[in-house]
Length: 286
Length: 352
Image 1 (cartoon, one colour):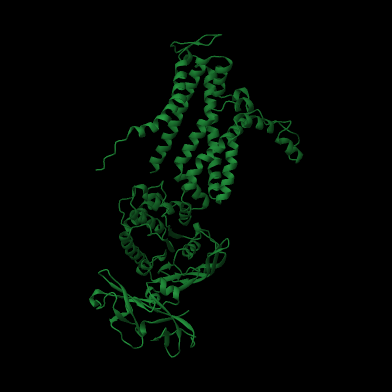
Image 2 (spheres, chains in turn blue, orange):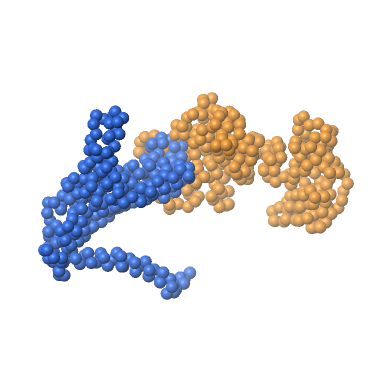
């Protein structure tokens, strides 16, 4: 039997620093938010400490319900779009020469340096009637007159995907580059066409990575709150926009906190559900 | 089943040549080994046959039909990869039945055939196991069963045994050979291990670091009659002695005259040659004996490993190794003067 050497204080001290940072920057603010969600709102003022469920009860409105569903819908849709484009895209990058891979990855990283604000305004300009891309198509003779492609649902979806795409690729890149190149070759020698190989072997053996990147993009896009205001119409506003509105413009902190916590629980539930379905599918196919 | 023919196959990767003007005729139903040091292009040749690479020029014919441009998934060959390339997300049964699933064979037939193949490789009852739950040798067997599922016209193996430990490798070699003989499938195995090639194959194709095929023949024919210095050195161990052909079946090595039985064609007097003699053909006698086909020297080292004895003899700077069985244990010690006898029949003359 090998007995584990008792760890000295030093070994535990190493963990103390991240634990402290986690407490200061994550657990304490979250605790404050939970507490505030039960506080009493003072109209015209701020809030008073207390314990009441009124904030949660006030969530039960048609607007909140519709916005919640829309937020989850657009996050799910953009995650699906990002993964279904990002997966083959990343696969082709990993099959390139090393230097070409680096160029592509640096390019994607540079997109990450753009903030949501810059992305939002840049695309609102590019999709506009007066100065947008449609002018180029008119100049090329492909269109009769310039049109406005924003604000609207497609513009919003496009903007969110543009923002989330580099993250998708970065999450998918490590597992795809580790994929044994003999796997698709084996599949071909066994009689599967390249397309069939892609779906049965490459997608199949990387199902976990696909679920993980889907969940990552889903959660990431739930937090987008500027793009809906820039690229969407008011009916395309997500819950993040409503929370910002409550917190900043209505100074209703308890309501904003209650919304945020409720929203967090619903999305957490969905994420767990996705993971469970992913696992079950695997267990079934096994 | 049909003969496989490679005609002037040439393959370049950028400016690097991987296979140089290869011409081969592989007979039906035989076990063929591509043998050579690493980087000699043997794996490239196998991948060309499998359709995973396209030759820069040349043709590949199967039973007279040109298959050079046929994509890998339409060739109906079974291949076992060096990394085995088992699908990690599928069970053993699903891995084995993959080629049948791709061909839309009925589900019941698939599992029936998979079970039969698992019996064949002695993995009965492993159908529902996961790949991660198997040992190295078991994975090997799954990979073999998977490649054989469609009854391939050609069975290709790319150094599949290199990851196994020595004991398991030897038993897998015998098993694989036995399996091949039972099924009668034309098999090509790529290996750098000459012992492995000698154990398993009907025909050995020896490739050299110049990416050419040097010799093709049965293992014993190649061992006994290597065509050049490289083959003599690579297959088994050999004593290579540089000398000059002095005419009338005689080679001069230093001051020693060596009478030989056979000579290569077109050899004229005064040409430089290399004489190859296998260690087990050389007899070491104590003392100095002055006759033809005798080399004198000092015993520099004796390696006695029990099952065989090797004597290292230093003959004026030329090292001669003799190998014998302990039954004929030599009467020499380290530091003794001794004579090596090189029988005329054992001296193979190679043009330098």
